[in-house]
Length: 76
Image 1 (spheres, helix red, strand yellow):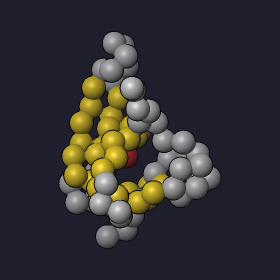
Image 2 (image 1 turned 90 degrees about the horizontal axis):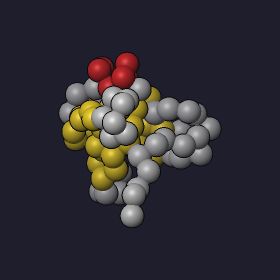
Image 3 (image 1 turned 180 degrees about the vertical axis):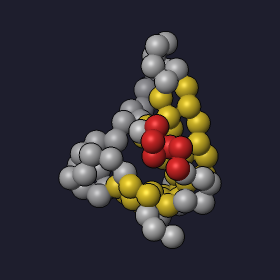
Image 4 (image 1 turned 120 degrees about the vertical axis):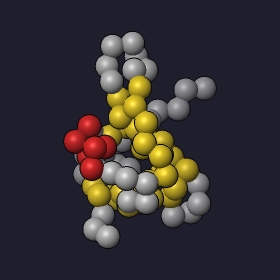
C-alpha cells in the first residue's frame, strides 16, 4: 500500500536527517525528501520544501510542531 510522505498540519515529530533525496514521483514535479531517524528509533521519509532541503546535511535535526505547516531546522 502507498504510504503518504506529505507533512500534515496536525503532525508532531522530531528527528535527525540521515539521507536526502529528490525525485519526480508523479512524472512532472520534482519533490525533495529527507529520511529521518525519529526519537523512538524508527525512520520516516517526508517531502519538504526545496529551500529547506538545500540547507540540510546529514546529522541536522528537524522538528515538526503540531499546528505548523512545515518542519523547521532545529538549532544545533
